[in-house]
Length: 245
Ligand code: SAH
Image 1 (spheres, rainbow, N blue to C red):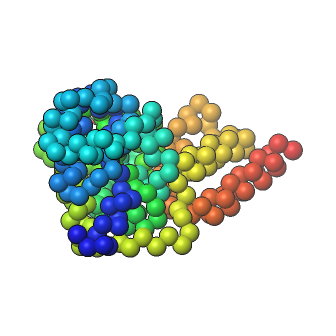
Image 2 (image 1 turned 180 degrees about the horizontal axis):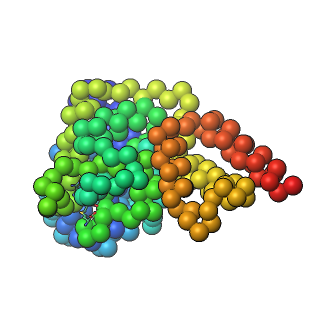
């Protein structure tokens, strides 16, 4: 691996949300290590640490030892400039959907702006809509439409492989002149936006979710810089001040 090829890797994390079977955590760590990925985040795993995870890691237990455990996905991705969720279902119309190659390209490019997260869901139920709301895009691995759910670690393996291929093709030297707003900053912006839209009577209080999801999609695509979010927040504060007069 060249220096440029290793730089993006230091900014990329794999996040496993609510994993039920510790064996899958170990197998995911093994899948990551084979592709040179190292940073594993675990959100409320059912059982961890666990001998079964270590056994299935088959030598990738250094990743397990260094894994960062969090209580929520918001905590695991708060400092990220870009997060992509994974889905076994192909039609999540509310989120821009990428294929594995496109996801890898965007993730690698995203490391130029800051930290990037690849988020995997629970074995049985995947990721909730509220969790996908924290992601700026969704990636679906094309499968047999009648049998679309891969084993968690298999999904990690495929996306990690695509990342390592894309990283070798188009290595990115991170050159952050001005950072993109983090997930945490964008969450604060959405709270502020919702408050302002309510106060001017634009948001239908009976169905706030639809509009807010569309707003997330719009701003997620734009990926504003920190300074741009400050301007937007300033506009919202001025709007709120006017509407309360
Ligand atoms: N019934 C769940 C299946 C979850 S499979 C659902 O419909 O979402 C467990 C996890 O493996 C998923 O949350 C996702 O992270 C990953 N996964 C499985 N199949 C996938 C696919 N075809 N594309 C992308 N990710 C997939």
